[in-house]
Amino acid sequence: MVEGRPPDGYVIGRAAKGMSLPSDSGDIPPETFRFFLHEIADWIADYRENISERPISPNAAPGSIVRALPTHAPEEGEPLAEIWRDVQEIIIPGVVHWGHPQFMGYFGSTTTGPGILAEMITAALNVNAMTWRTSPAATELETVVLQWLRAWLDLPTSFDGVVYDTASISTMHALAAAREEAVASVRKKGLSGQTPVLRIYASDQAHSSVEKAAIALGIGEENVRRVPSDSSFRLDVNALRQFLAEDLRANFQPLAVVATVGTTSTASVDPVREIAHVCRDHAMWLHIDAAYGGGLALLPEASWVKEGWDEADSLVINPHKMLFVPFDFSALYVREISRLRNVFTLVPEYLRGDTVGADTNYMDYGVQLGRRFRALKAWMVWRAFGRRGLEVRIREQMRLAQLFASFIKDDRRFELLAPVVMGVVCFGLVEKRGYDLAAMINASGRAYLTQTKLHGRDAIRLGLGNILTTEEHLRAVWAMILASLPQDA
Image 1: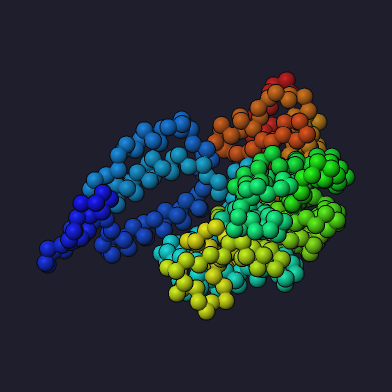
Image 2: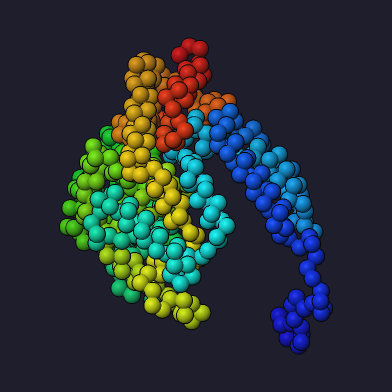
């Protein structure tokens, strides 16, 4: 027998004539499925309705969940009732409840009724949206929701989009398209032996996904130049010009600038129009990371946030942040999207029959082949809310942020550490700079805040965006902060 090959005549799964599968072969009978479907649906409804009563963070020590579970996978199937019991008794107690109305860390993570229902339908359908033919509805619905969102963002029709999971992946794909245009034949031959070295520019407040993209694309982490930000944590355009002049003298090749609309720490907005002028002067790609802040563009009174978008080569927005779509959903728009397709389209023989004749096969626009039916949840949420409903919710988060900022301004023990331009408030104690206030709050399980560093200063960061969060919850968190102050503060 040749190693690695089965013996002649061997057939995997051969069964005797008339043999049937055992009753415990893995799936469950329809009546059992229906029972647990109703059981879990009721649990989901109760969970969402009563989530505010749960502690946000588990008290579990690292490794405690591993120790509570068997070390080996089961040889025989187990009853679903036992599995569901372990979900409730072991898994759920180890979850951080991001949807809790007093979870105010990172970005606003929200659950909505339409979003949850859409995820249930998506799981039941379990389609692969790699080509039009493998799921026409998934492909065409993705096109529809991307067109809706493009209109809401007021992007020119020369921009077309594609849905990925997160902005990190979107940014990587945008910079891959930029690399292809800057270096001839990089798709076929790679960067081996190519000169000069490419450089990417982003502010010192930009997301770390820029470096990760540079690592993945062979550009190199050290070739991401972090440009200083100004006193409002916006990219300093004069410093950018200085960096470019230095790099050109040293024979580096400027590739792209990543401008941020809604930075991770402070939600600041870079001066995109000025950056666009610099990009034109140096024939660089302009990518806008509007993962968080792009949702603000839906508000007519916030039209300023779109300044310069019409001059971009690409823009990413995460509707799972400000536009109430369940995680994960990230939309990348590229001016003349064929620039992206030219990098990634690749059709092997085993897929050729499923790609012929279709206007769009979304597998052609990225590394990923298998793709979830993500468009369904955006379509259901946005239809249920309408633009007006989204606007109302966004305005309320902005109002709550300004209200919390007023609490800070009115208390001499605290100070704001960044302008409040969206649903993010960065603040600190005036004197107790070594006091870990956020850790004390989070340990209580009744609220959750995050921390960051702003121009060398430690800052506490409060982020809003959950539709379940009300003014009552905000005031409760403020009361907790005051109660946690050291006695001499």
